[in-house]
Amino acid sequence: MYRWGYRLKSREDLLEPAEDAAKVSVKRAGKVRFSNQNVVISSIVVGFVFVVVVFILIGAGGFVFAIIIFSFAVVIVTFFFLLLIVVVVVEGGC
Image 1 (cartoon, helix red, strand yellow):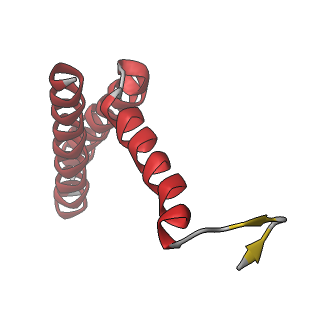
Image 2: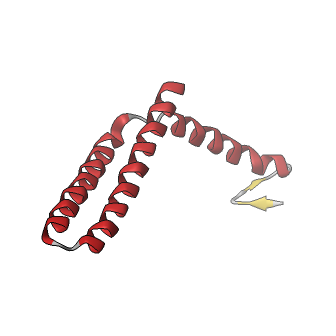
């Protein structure tokens, strides 16, 4: 079987580059740094801004709307705290 100008000996010849690429991608995934720390911090800040907006809306009388936005803010902040924990665990594990 000829492909791209050279002869492939077997199916394993096709799989070796894919295995090497998988190893490289695993190594890169293990080396997650705090480069996305700014993303996490800015997202948490956005979540707290949502909370402040909620309290302003409660003061203005928009109670139901404020509870809806507050629940979104809690979900956002919780998600990014979990993301921060995952980043710390990956960073500490490798």
